[in-house]
Image (cartoon, rainbow, N blue to C red):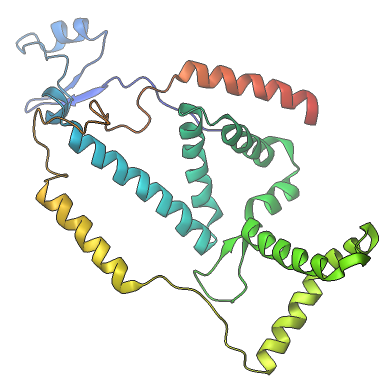
Length: 269
């Protein structure tokens, strides 16, 4: 399980003289130990950007950049087969799913975490945690999600079932499905023997470079990542907040998760 700190209270503040403990019960300490120092303002630990008027356009681009980096971190952890890093991304994604009311995604994500840490045995949890990737090339950084590999098998299965024609029935379909792994190995072996070129689609790098340069130019000209006090946001997002989890109801989240935990306890334990 993971704990979320929702009480953002400053505990320790540094001054030129000494360390001052600053929180909601510090009055007695200030009077006894530092009688000559003036009381600190409430927003002493806030950043300058938080003290002044917000820049909503800057907030939008920072939040969008953060979300893009989160997605890239998730994809890179899959390519590298890094289940530990993927778990961190999964935990954060759970909060996003719950905030934006993607209840089915939030349900399955929380159930996965519960299976890994509580429901399954140690060996079963280990296999579930690590066996979520597939590498058909044997090279580093070339893993794909195991679900995607299953989609490839489904594609082969559908092609074989269409070839059965009028002979299709449950028995024949089961025979074809059980022979998919061996069939794929045989096809790959034949392709290797006849030196058949592997057709892999790639994006147009020239077009991608032009698009990236255009985006960078637009962001630079618009000073998207330069904080400007009081700058208005976009018409579609007039009051956009920088924190991507801003507005999440933590009490509702914990109440929802506890309700599911009780339900799963009766089902699985």
